[in-house]
Amino acid sequence: MLHLFFKKLIKSPNMQFTRNLVTDPKYGFLKQLGLSTENPGLYDGRWGGTGKLIESISPTSGQVIAKVRESTPEEAANAISEAQKAWPQWASLPAPARGEIVRQIGDELRKNLKPLGQLVSLEMGKILPESIGEVQEYIDICDYAVGLSRMFAGGIFPSERKDHALLEKWNPLGVVGVISAFNFPVAVYGWNSAIAMVCGNTIIWKGAPSTPLISIATTKIISGVLEKNGIPGSVASLITGGADVGEALVSDKRVSLVSFTGSTKVGKEVGLKVQSRFGKCLLELGGNNALIVAQDANLEMAMRAAVFSCVGTTGQRCTTTRRLILHKSIKTEFLGKLKTAFKSILGRIGDPMEDSVLYGPLHSQQALDAFKKTIKTAEENGGTIEFGGKQIDRPGFYVEPTIISGLSPDAAIVQQETFAPIVYILEFDSVEEAIALNNNVEQGLSSSLFTNNIQNMFKWIGPLGSDCGIVNVNIGTSGAEIGGAFGGEKATGGGRESGSDSWKQYMRRSTVTINHGTDLPLAQGIKFE
Image (cartoon, rainbow, N blue to C red; front, side, top):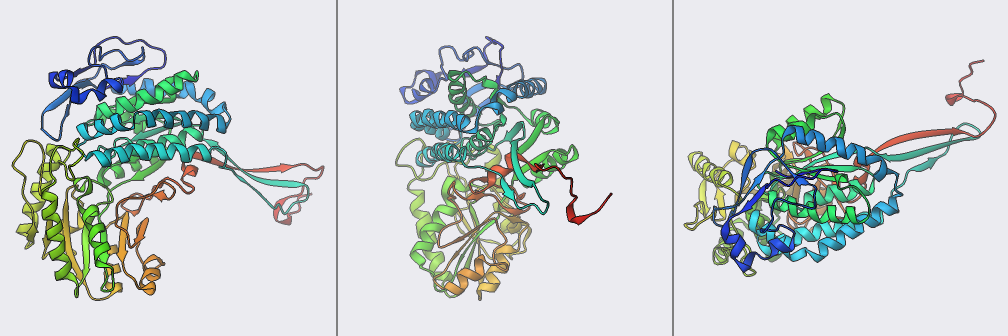
């Protein structure tokens, strides 16, 4: 796609917009973001790429938005070289000075909040309020990282030896690779980059090949701030492409940490390759999330949470509710209300760039095909389509939100994650049974229990409760805050991003012992004289 060089001028054209985007005032935000349709190939003397042309396709229409040129594996290797060269300058800045630059990045994102959100809606397909909310996440994590830049610290521990100090020191890793997915084309990179940068690392970002315009616009904002501060743009470099470019990033020993967001299948391969060279991995993989509604739950709250968790982002969040586990006594009532709510959603389908739209398209033809295949498999295995199950007859990749009942919790299709608005209905008698159903999948990302029983709450969050990284009570499975660590267990990969002490993953720990005396005692009282 586009490769962000350190000191090289590439003037060859590398991006072409379709004519309707050039002439329609509706898309004026593209120019505001620096994606000039008048001279699309020149990006402040630092942009270029010699790989194949790829197409950015609008999920709303199924039509090509723009053609963009990819990086090659060789250009990816060059980007790593330049990031490595820039690292000493960046790492030598005091952490609060790095935080100040990240603060400026957050301010530039604020200035571009709506246009960048509009671009997310155009290219990814999520509705505008969610798209703007995603950009806001990046802004929020910049604010968080600014404070963190004055707070992350090691420790001083008591030494058993006289005149000795035992310290813990944290230092940056070097070059960090970030491979992000299409469903959160801004926020996931933001979680990683803001914290990794204040920790003193340089970044190589490989955005999703299907959302290249978002990656370009975001990187332009960052590089502009860096250059204004006399910092080389290669501190935050952008590459894109397919598996060959990803392989170049994952396999390069100079990349100390690879943060990968994507499927469990690909994440396993990434983890093995990085571990084989003794690199570090941060894996954010699949989720097969359950929302449990107990007999004593506030059903109105649970309903509102379930609707958003099931159909928000058209079911394309890693935290989307895939399994709705209902107490037998309230199952019929709850399912009836859920169908009514889903029916109302159908009246709010449309162009995700329009403010009034509540439900947009799937992201791609591939997602549409997976939806259809899952529906067919579910029916072949005895599942009942309670609601939806069909493609919507309109341009683009639109499908009905879907409810399926009658399948065993152990059915292969229920055990899998389909990145689409499909939820399976399961039932239970006891909270212990519901917890067992929640844990009965290989993934362990997000989980939710609706109950007003305090015993159930503490059972749910205790050692024998949910085995997920995100364990919620009386809120849905989607909608994490940046202050808490985000990530999951088991086949979700075990990684943690965003808040809490996630910053430690972007640094290396040193245990330091300083002898400030004149004797040389050994630990554990050993005598060697």
